[in-house]
Image (tube, rainbow, N blue to C red; front, side, top):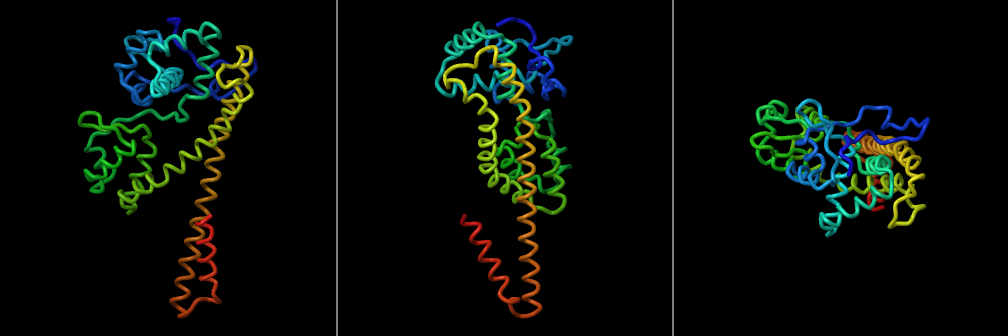
Length: 288
């Protein structure tokens, strides 16, 4: 692999996909290891073997970007499926020799790059207590670590999504028990995973026109990369829209049930059986 610093995903002439319109994510080697679910030692080893391009040098600091994240995710995936580093090295070498390296990095990043532009942030235990108050109990912290919301780093903790952590802290200060909030995340996560898989399948279905065990022809890659970059934010918009719809429906149902319960208490009976009817409809929805 050439020892040239990786750059943002390429685009065909006249293209304006998000990768060229917004700043790329950048990482130190520690941040790269954390967001890619690997170790600094592995990052160094993969660089030495030519599996990973070296970082861009800024003085004494090496700066990595999403091309490195997507390559590390690919390596992790292949290792999990039983391939050895030697197998992966041969595969990547064959790919790089058969395709333009920039286009392959662009395809890897469009599919496997991070969807978030947040950088991990380190918090001391004191900072977490200041954020969550007395709700930051040892059991709550352990649960947050188990869910991957926090990662232990010596005596400190690291969050890959500081915005979500701040939102959780605000909700906790508003009186929502932290254990209940973490339980809600645990319950909701499998559903989000299923939604994410469905939407990623839609985005990368652009590859279905090619053979499953072959890369697209080099001439097709730039347009394919551009299409995937344009589809990615649309998938996020769809998730947000559907989540807002579901929240409105759930909160409306709750408000209706609560008002009906108040009416029943005041009147001493169900208003024309509407409460029972609504409860039956809600139960039917849940079963579906």
